[in-house]
Length: 67
Figure 1 (cartoon, rainbow, N blue to C red):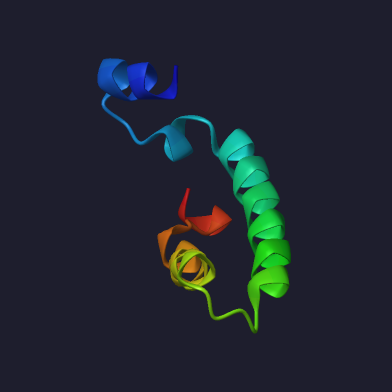
Figure 2 (cartoon, helix red, strand yellow; figure 1 turned 60 degrees about the vertical axis):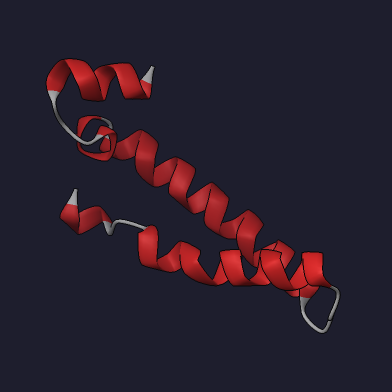
């Protein structure tokens, strides 16, 4: 649905649905932080890949003031 809205209206879904985007972004941030805590200190390859991905999430978020 979100991709369809972007194609139809030519706008970023975060700008079309700012409240929903903010809610989802916050929920994902909370879950990502919890996973980060569980993975800290592990040295297996899968955990290191997950930690690397988790470290990039913040750079992809959009501040509410920018919506």
